[in-house]
Length: 429
Ligand SMILES: Cc1ncc(COP(=O)(O)O)c(C=O)c1O
Image: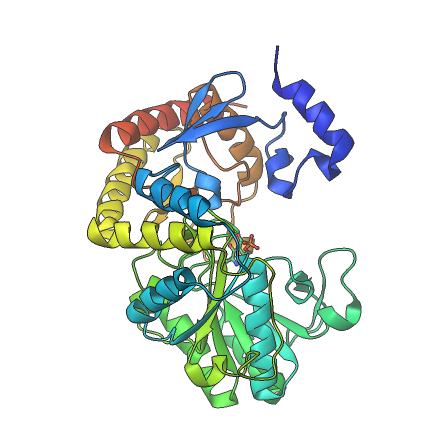
């Protein structure tokens, strides 16, 4: 009989840690990873035939849910017509026009195959445009695994970073400054000391990789101001928030225009697509228009382009962002009600269709060092209790949950009841 343990034992022999992206190994929550075989709408089904309501949704791309019928048709048509040409084609043109038509600060767009590539390339453009080498990032934001983004705070006061992964050279890490979120003074110190050397500041305007850490609009405006004064580019990494938090992402919600923006996840409809975009004058530095080299064999692959456009236009015609807002609001309100009876009530943080549950904290958690001690241990218990009750959450206390258009009212009611019950079960270790 097929089972998770034997599949994992085999996987360990042929892949590092048995996986192709670390969090899938369940190291953060303990236990054996579950091998999933099929997915549909709001659910995942494992190799033993068990079905779960899925709030991971492949870590965010599936804003319509698994195997949405319209995205399916678009992808199958793309397969029928040819799935990669390595030539000019009309499909990336259609998606680029749709994005440029809806996101005014994305005048010109380059498609790549992942969020990591998008960030790496946007920062290359920023360095070329400014002739500077430093990039400022924030502790608590994740921007993919390009070397310069795999850094943690060093010992210096004004943000000097050190590598957070083996294999990243000290020289590369030294070109990144790292500053705390939600801290104007720390930002000022970095800009006062290094302003003239900073090519770009990159930020997730809604940090969603160390839990969900909503930022004060005032702080983000302060960041924008310091960038403008220093002549540094402001890069919004909207790989998660783009086309999930409304059609114009966090930038639209905040009314802040970034110089460059990175996208991923939702824009590919669940296929490997990333993009970086910005004002034409900046993007015209990219080859072949300009001298910033960046290329990709499978960039703008027609399957992702057609699936992405199908997903975005469906969201638009169904008023999807408003629908998700209402459903997510109701779902989270139910959780809050149910969690209120716990001995130690939990907190539910939400922005649009993204949510994060954590143990009680004194106030709004805006930076990783404010996450309550013991949250990870509690989450392991909660995660497994949820699994036992048929709900699959992303397998780490730092990952956020995603609600899709396939999570209808009935599904969300069932899931809320299961999660409330799981929270009671997880309370006593
Ligand atoms: C904000 C952000 N930027 C960049 C990335 C990297 O994207 P990818 O995993 O497609 O390389 C991620 C991935 O989760 C992300 O959340």
